[in-house]
Image (tube, rainbow over all chains, first blue to last red; front, side):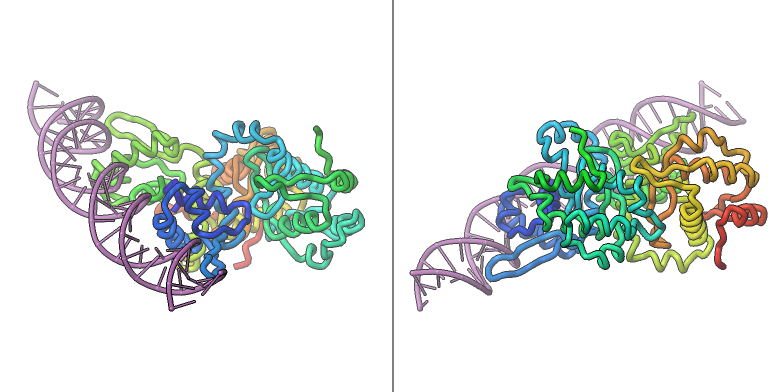
Length: 215
Length: 215
DNA sequence: CGGACGTTTCGCTGAAAACCGAAATGTCTC
DNA sequence: GAGACATTTCGGTTTTCAGCGAAACGTCCG
């Protein structure tokens, strides 16, 4: 499936969680609409893509979080070679970005590390869970959008960061926490790419929670 | 690389950590020696295989643990469909087996779970480490082959089990612990497949370390 | 209704590569 | 040194499939 450059380009373009019509994906992949249509059909039948039809448009997205995690894992060996190049090109992308739908980059790694240290995150055999101390702290710091009940139920998983080469928090729990921070205005999505820009207020709140960026 | 069934079969055959000559791999993949030779050349140049030449034989193996982990990750979606079939076919394989070179199956999952519970394993952002309590217990239980100094330095990583659907201990630390248990005679390799057979003595020792199999 | 637009289907071409048999290479054994 | 064996290289055939243009289909808009 990923052996074809055109298909890889399509999947890569969707890895930020966006939803795009067929024509745009054809342009991104650099092939004709007819060719792209054939690829999209195969990816759809292979269960890698999801589809949302609306009028004469057909919007494609990754099928689910598992697919995104799988693609991240697949891309690791290749990314190891070009990681330095990517990192040097965009510092913002290196500091904080979305890894599909959860927080990655320096900020993601530091958060995972700090909260493990404080005992807010617990690693069990069924995944990573957020303990009540952590959930309470998150809400008290102003992240009211986070539903404590929900956060305690969700489980996360480790995800290897291809710029930092260290673990950060992914899975449903990671997605929920990242979403709550976006809703609370701590982070803002960049227009151009997958970068996440911390707001001044967000930086302050995160520091209260033990998440400090060196630079 | 994996798009070709013949190449996939070759890699799959080497995933148990074995080392096999070209002719055998050709037979396993169901292609002629000439075809297999071409595939092996590509896999070698691609850095996926390692080579050990001995006389007129050329023995191939996976290049390193990273490749094995990568293949495991690749195979996950497919394994999910056929997992039940495989599990039903061989109970021994389901209880304990090698996942490349570390312990997997029920025994691997239970070990990881129990030692996390006891605080012998610690999950940090740089991987999973064995704390001195755990290393001491392992040696005291009779696993003298384990070098305490070395074990404390090594780091492990989570590995998702495709029969149990839960996490177990992989990475260099997992390999070292599994190797020590094999050397100590707690486990024995099966002839036919990747199964690991616990010896009566091994079962007793493992139970002392909190690793109990239900059945 | 009719034209513009996004998308898919169809028919076809060309290039990549998987595959095999035969021959060549290198190694072991007698 | 001769023959058996494992493996690779070479030459050639066949299969596979990405890719495109043209046509067909369905939707939106005036």
